[in-house]
Image (cartoon, rainbow, N blue to C red; front, side, top):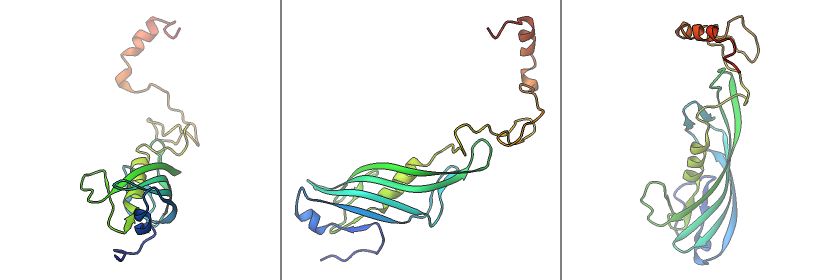
Amino acid sequence: MTRAPRRGPFLVPVAALRRQPGSSFEVHASGPIFELAVSHSRVPDGGEVSLDALLESVLGGVMVTGTVGADWEADCGRCLEPARGRLAVAVRELFTEGAEEEGSYRLSGEWLDLEPLAHDACILELPLAPLCRPDCLGLCPGCGVNRNTETCDCTEGSDPRWAGLSVLRDAAPNWRE
């Protein structure tokens, strides 16, 4: 019998499963996965990542079907206030012996390490442009005030690069119709 290469919440024994083609069992695992970040979004280090999955013995490996979940945090892309959310990612991947290709998952003897699957699912689902709320108004480009909490006296369209177009607007008073 092969011993587990390391202990961890995402390491699952699959020897019995692999001996009975067509058999399956459920796995519920959770624990921290570190360095989960893209762009401005991240799962906090030490934050709990959960995996609820069905493992099925199939020809050539083990099929894993389930859901990966984690809380994420970021700075809002519009107003820079804290943004938070929850990931719920559906996964369906085949783990095979000798998987060498990028994008495939390796089945190592009697043990299945689900951490790479959970890691990749979180990375792919983290928002690249996080918002604190869908209707965030952002910062005023003129004075920098947060338009979600305050109003400002800046006039819209005050960018001098657009001043030449005001001549066209003034020449055609019904331009908005």
